Length: 452
Image 1: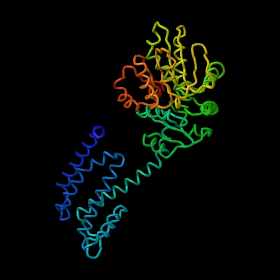
Image 2: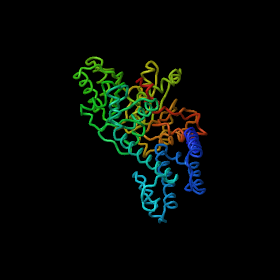
Image 3: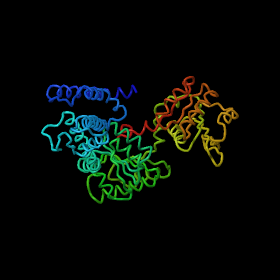
Image 4: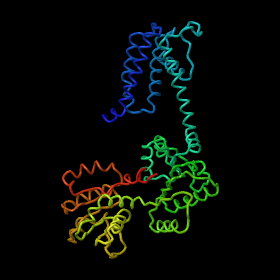
């Protein structure tokens, strides 16, 4: 609650200043009458003072709630107490809701004719109700046209980032770009309602379109975009968009403003073939950078831990989990320290056990087998341990368990996002000297790191 208050306290302060000015203005300039009796004035003041509580729960709709509720309070009280004839609660409610339809029930004269002057309380009610209705209509109209407006701006002025295919990886990049006040357009065939709502709240423009639809390049304003990110879960789809994007630019024959196209490729064969293609065969109409998120995490790790490889002694590494990050940790270390003898013992789901050069692979099922028992039986001495499993919680639990077996061995764990750090800090209070994080995808999926 304190964090929320700190985030909106300036808005609350501005609210009270504006309300104070309006109240003082009413006191000096509004023609007070019998409708503004002590009871309703007390109710209105209490409402104005307590309204900021609503801001703790919603800022986007705070103005709507304020206008609707103030119109309801003043309208209901006015119709129920100040009509010429006594009306039931049901009638007073009905008359009040008519205000939101910009229709004021004339129940303040004997013959039902419009009076020259309405009670001040009803003047407040009808103007706040009208403000609520009109602002709601305009906001609904704007939201209907918001995407078209955003796309028009992108097509006309550019300087935006386009992300093809939405997934959890590029969400991290999208969030970083939005934090830096960059404009982002995301293109994919399908978005869940929850995802689309989340992106729109982040002010991200969402385009429902197939990546095979050539019109999507024009719609998303590719001509004036800053960058394009291809993060499809299927590497082939990312390559397809890359080729067709270049073909589109060549066919339309325009000078693209795209500073960089980022292509996320996890399949090593596709990655090596594309690198070879770029170096020997093709020159794209824009700069292309091929990345593997896990390789970037490993690269960043070894850049920050060069001292490990500078150790004069022979190093023996244990790597638990090899499919994604574990493989990159091994390969990057061997690349950086090609002349130094490094030994890797790797545990994962392997069809057969073998030793290739300095890497020994051993079949191990973390869901069935006990990692602690397995390592204890081998009686090997490890310089460093890397746990690169798929689940943050499993990494953390296995790391804590191994820290008891190897209290003096640094153990590095793979966390997919920074939210685990709170659990990590709490759980490692006694063993924090030996447990560390390899890094997260959030560290490398940023505007600065990717230089876009």
